[in-house]
Amino acid sequence: MTNELKTPKERLIYRIRAGLIMLGSATKAELSQRLGISFPTISKFIAQMEKDGEIRYSGDDDSSGGRRARRYSYDTEYMLGLAVFVEKDETKYSIFNCVGDIIEQGTNPSVLQEDTELLASLIEDLIEKYPRLRSVAIGVPGAVDNGRIIYIPPYKQYQDYDLKEEFEARFQIPFVVENDMNASVLGYASNFELENESLVYLYFGQYGPGSGIMINGDVVRGSTFFSGEISLVPQYDSHNFLQALQGDEPHRRIVLSGDNQIDAVARLIATLGAILNPRAVIFNDDEVDEELLARIAERSVAYIPQKHLPTLLMSNWRQDYLSGLQHLALNLMITECC
Image 1 (cartoon, one colour):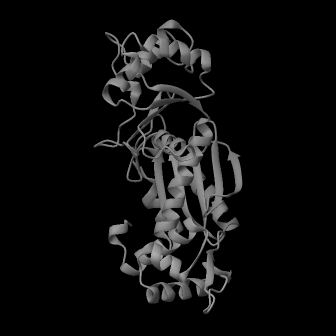
Image 2 (image 1 turned 180 degrees about the vertical axis):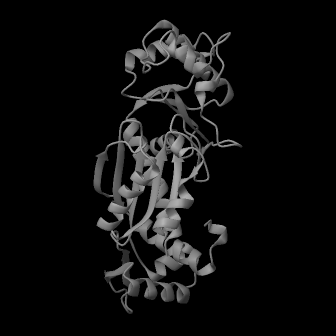
């Protein structure tokens, strides 16, 4: 359900909820002034939200001569969120409250090798353990179109599977499903307060290279939700980016080391710089080090002027990935749950 389809009451509750979470605590007058909502309307909704247990009275302000104003804060444990990412070798999850504090994290065997029922069973167990779960974000190593997984080789059981629709119908709470690299670039931007920047996140990982692209703060998904599939970028006479990285060992996990691989990455960096002109390109710190980034940067200037070369950075991919999913789940929790 989008915000445009919400009722006026639901939109008001969202604004009050978001305002209280952002401010930490507030009086009715402060919320009225901050949100541009009339004092009687604020009072009406505050009373209902307090009755429901969503907010709580947290004390009176000092008197300025008249009646002391009552101050309210949001119950951070009233709603919980769940972020899950599924990869080839593992399934990681994180439970958190509505201000992002982590309550539990865990790692399970990968669910990709099995049918979708194993993933559903994990989520069901967590909902039973945490009945206040109100939103779930799931990250997958494939292209996603509004909750439907449209490209996820080699896991045929997930291909063309509408994970969002199926799981929302089953669990009766809102879900968001996102590509792993889109979530990663979103997580990196939110962790470092770069929400309005242009960034590209590269990962060479378990399935071949992928990327998440953010332009001026917006994650780019493309007209058919296929953006970031950089494996297919043509590079040499008969090789795309993936083939250039693999060389004569097409089934081996990619490890960046040789001059040919450095050149392939440098060509991609130059392409990204010329087309997108991002502020930075972020690499998984498990896959590169400072020396390797220096070699890539040195080679890249053979293809693009130095002043237009993006900054090459390293970060913890798994942490950024979970942070991005948590960001999506928090937004869903605040805007969808009433």
